[in-house]
Image (cartoon, rainbow, N blue to C red):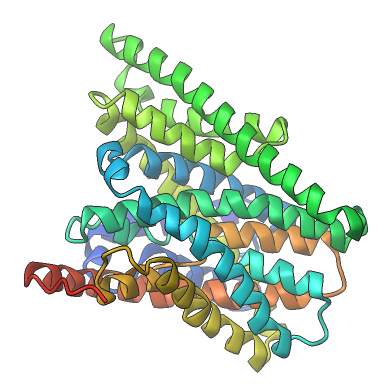
Length: 404
């Protein structure tokens, strides 16, 4: 145990020391840590034996995602969001269902051994985008505000929307729900997860923001405790929503939106302290993912997994986005940009772990395909984020705005 702590702490220390340098390179933190986890783990040199059970990895990914969603939402400009609300609405209400449908159709000829329900689970698991992996884009000021806000809101809400659909399919796959009642069960679950998640998230944020503003006004918060209020609120919102059968991810994101809007004068100093906690948790999660899931995927790997992973990151994501944004006034290269930056990450890790724990017949294929897709996404989106953002900024600066 102490050896693992020493190795992980050393990795975090070294990365912190060279983080500014790495930000100027194509290699994101996620790429570095996944590869380190793979090379140092049991499938590499064997010096890092995390012994992370599926449940432990899932819990770590869930809590990390909850914190990242909260902090990213808190940074959202609500005025910009109000002006560009139609774009994330198109991505969530049109693009997301089409992505799930196209993912299902593309998997049918590739994975004939899986049942239709298992194929549905795979399609849903790889539909949500990742706020953490997309951070290099949504925080890059050279990317237009409308696009950054839309991608941030989409990644913040699509995993919460997918959760009830995924849970309904998982219940059907494990014979907990009769086929005849599947539609009504799914509808109730969706409404419950979203409604309870939003309600609890906003309630927690309202109370938390009121207290933070008053505590700050009275100078009751010492500098050494600045980093704790935001992570605490994010986890309260997540855990409370989960406890009352709501979506913890939607609760975290909606709480972050309201919190950021209510504490504008104090937001920056709280978020700067909290984001380092989220970044550290995310990087440790990627080490664990590289040391466990990636190695397992390599053992079970075949060409169909790679083919579906490539399709998932390109056609399955980009075509629905293009269709959803038709008539939006966006230029073709902007639609392509939004379509490409749909990275798969922590949410898909959580879904894959849930499939693994269910022990359904096709779980190994689903988990290995998800791991392959996430690995490709970590590399492809990590390398392309900054160059593509600069390319987009150049097109925008030259006034090349011809919409198709």
